[in-house]
Image: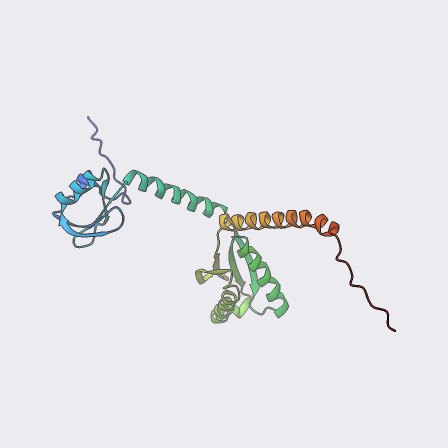
Length: 223
């Protein structure tokens, strides 16, 4: 029995060129300019004249929105962005910081500083409250503590997942403002700047030491 093979189009793949089968479209030019509502035949002709593709970017609009672009280049750039996002995700480590509901001020400060360090390094922080005994009957206190924690680290990260009950614990995840690649880029730039500053200081040092001193003005003897 013959097997019928069909081409599978992923949901993420937009319709292009002759696959766009609607009478009218709202056309966007290759530079992002708004052309307006035109017949599909006109849009296809303009794309062909520009030696580019016609890509449906908003299929649910009335009429659908299409754009003239280099679809091959668009797909390549999208794939590169997705690859970078996956790499950043893989490099991001989930660090755990644990609290007791009745935590001492100095313990809280210590854990806060640790969390700030994780976030500054580009890692996510999983803040976890460990409930003991009857503390489980007062989850609102855990929420208040985690919200305070989120406010205290707001300079370095934002809440990715709100406080939720996980067994006997309550957890919340904070994501860093900067991913690991951005942190590494900044660190490399800072190291290069420091190295350049040290080089210039070393170069300027001997010249400054060897510079002739200005002559001191003569002082008249008092009569």
